[in-house]
Image (cartoon, rainbow, N blue to C red):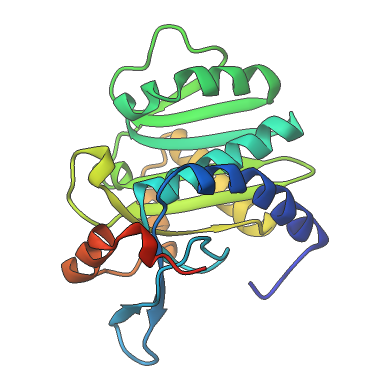
Length: 227
């Protein structure tokens, strides 16, 4: 990011403390995406245990969930602000229902996007139906408050239906200007301005990854992860 703020550095340190327990508990795999100068093709770097912020990576579902949970824990620590999360389908949210119901008691707003019928009882959560198929491919977790900003933006890169087999391309950031821009996009889309979906896909376009590179991530043994 060209513009950096003091808040970004403070939030990053708080986030890293929240992320550490999740990295110790599972097998997270992430590969940084490298764009070739003047070419449309991309290549993948060496596997990393902790993906860097503001750099596009290919994530397995465990790496993506670890970052998601660290942002949620950051929101729980701050105890004010707005948390926005897209779960693709409502069945994915059911596993996090209790967690998000608790967050909704402490935060100013918790908004969950997903296709399907929302649960009858889930605290003070606002449910937003996904009405455009394109948005079902995204997994976004965003937290915005006066004291901290964080966002994870991922797009599913393969066609897997089972959540454990899904691979995502995306990035995370603590830049408050970027976070507020993404929050504004989703809040306007939730008002029915579906013309903004095309703009969203254009502005946050993710690189296309080959099936071979996706398989490389799936097949890599845990010990192959680099520090």
